[in-house]
Image (cartoon, rainbow, N blue to C red; front, side, top):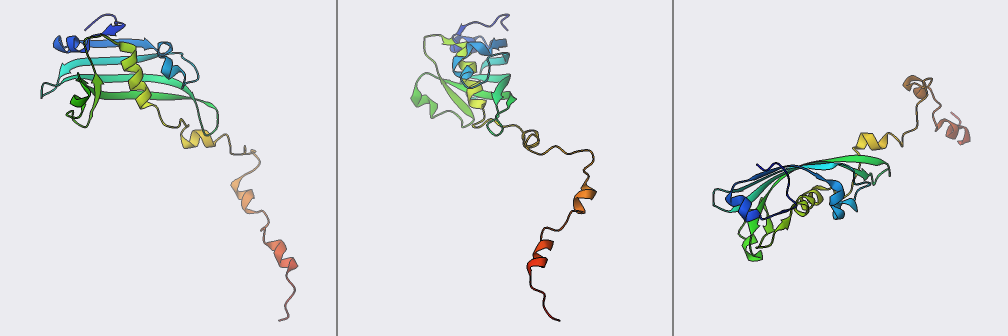
Length: 176
């Protein structure tokens, strides 16, 4: 396991040596992600295991965790969205090889050039984001409910007038 996270990696070399990268990357370095969140504070905790699967396919087992500050699209208030995402990236050297990967693998196109580690992690975070960020139902709806006075109680609410009682006054009196 490496002590410090490199900026760029050669995934196939790391698979050959069965390396593990573990550490934190600042959210502020992930520019596509920062466009979708309220601020770029915090870090993404990552663990990347480079290995071969039972069919000798080179893979990266990823485990990415982050707490992102977003805006709830239901109420417009700030919220924290927690990501705890694990996935398997199948390393392929050509797009045609991606079709042969198992369904639960995500293809990662690699070549002779190094890849930016933060781009790989950023892709994992982007894929884990919700389509629409929203609070849990109870958290979000609480702000829309009127505040209850201590004097108001459910018992008093049942004592209110029937709203249809006034209609009885409008109806002509029928002779019996």
